[in-house]
Image (cartoon, rainbow, N blue to C red; front, side, top):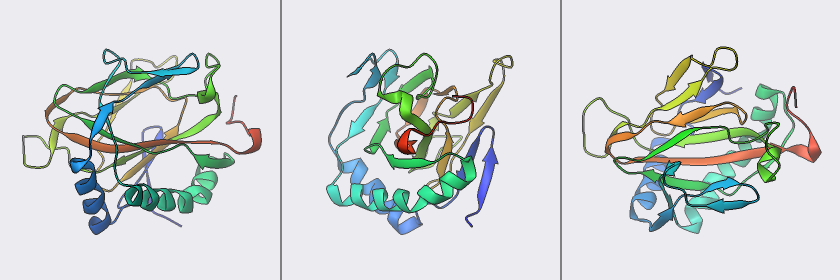
Length: 205
């Protein structure tokens, strides 16, 4: 059994990527070309920088396969931890948030209002690749916290997550969250979403 740590409504797994693997993935991400990250809704994906200001990176196929394998191996553990039957995850998004980058408060899917493919999302995944620091430092970034919002009626509650490099954060996709503005440096992460297995539903949906 892996050593998960409860973080607000999510679970954090430290050292999901061991240091040599993490450094190799980060090196590839830093060198990769990119395009504006998109926002999905109403059956289409669009680059809307007023909502999500980040760059999606075209890393090597070898890097994608490496992280894909690690995540696939984790599927049974996530199924047990969240009590949700899961199938495969969506294609990985390797992301860079430059200084000034952000993602406004949102839900990834599995909400009553969604009528597109995000309705099948059950568990959201964020993998942190470099360090958040209090001051500008080489290779790190300031700001850029991932912040959970409390559920109704406690919508005023906030829980910020600081993930160490190589850590994986998992949470239910209907959880409201945001990425606050990066105030210095570049924030590198990987995001993906596990879908329900054979139409299985999360509790309450």
